[in-house]
Length: 391
Image (cartoon, rainbow, N blue to C red; front, side):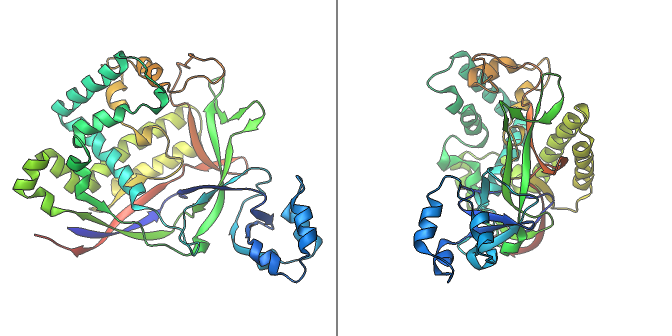
């Protein structure tokens, strides 16, 4: 079965290229950020190469001074420009992944990763055998103590091996193929400002500032409302009786994979309820109200449609299934034991110290000026048409 889907950005989406851009790369003017092209600068008739080389060698060099001093239209020197709420000044801009023609897209691996987390959580909640084996593996990893760098240890790998398959050749997600989205126009991008918000010593959720450093990022993001398309294919050959037996795929695994839309809706609802409660409890009504609306949307979507949170800013809980083992006071895994074993939320200033109030105590939120707007990365995915059917 191969299905075409439409993905609509409910909130802006940032999928990073792993590159950052700074004041050498661009120029801010009149609500736009221009990505400077050195080839265009060198080709411009006003350019004096020796003077430019000397200027760029200065630590205080800024394109703003260079361009305005020569009364040049910045568009003539740039490959593209994007709307930007304010000057980034000295803050780097996280670049979005794009095609060669500066057209943004969402990699299939990003979508598949979010689906994988949802599928893992659902199987853990439905299979007592998988849950118990995963629990035993997690407890053993905690009790054996840290080895090497605990932050790089991956207890999830053992849990995934139990729930989804013992190795890549036997992994259930072999049967799920997710394409990259088709790229969209470069003007569908904008630059947004995202703050890390955190709980302070008074247990208030505030913008994080540590030792004078503001934890804010400017990000190139796909604008809310933009639509992209991709295809999702289930490899039917892997579910024929012989292959299914050889790969050790269970009926529960197959059922959930085939019903991936329902699985994602269920897991998204659980996550959104938790996030709504977090922001409501810590008196951030703007974000709590946003999640109220998102929960309502999730509950009224047509058959086959679902919500996912993807990309940068999704956060710890959106990418893990830890809560399955630690969600209440009678849970079989002690939450603090887990955190200490894997160095989750260890104090930067006091080694071995862990804040017991809440983990994670931080979230990334888009801001407009000083006003919180929404979290990043929420998308609505709806089926368009069945491209191919394999019996």
